[in-house]
Length: 115
Image (cartoon, rainbow, N blue to C red; front, top):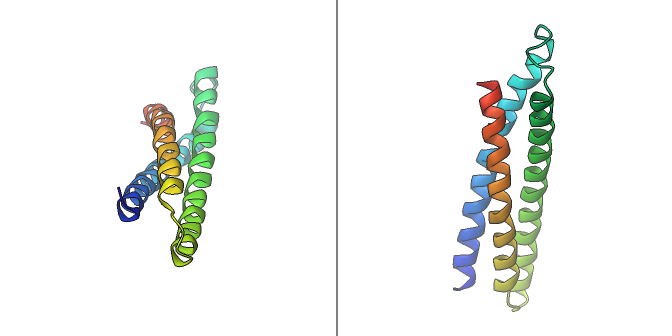
């Protein structure tokens, strides 16, 4: 695959990560609003664990999107200098794709609790 195909794959994965981030933020706002509920409804270890996990997933997604921006910037510089950038893009896209599964699971748990 050429650099263009790698760029498209990275941008697709980044868009998916941004959508997941938006969903996580919405669900977290709902969950965080539940902290004032009557005792017993939100004091379970599972609820708190899911909240913490979702916050970590949100932070990780934010970091990945920042890294994607940096990779795109370095790729642009490499291309301008006549260097190959395909390997860098492929490696980062693979990392982003592996992370997507973990973040999707955290999002599903939070949505179930917020639901």
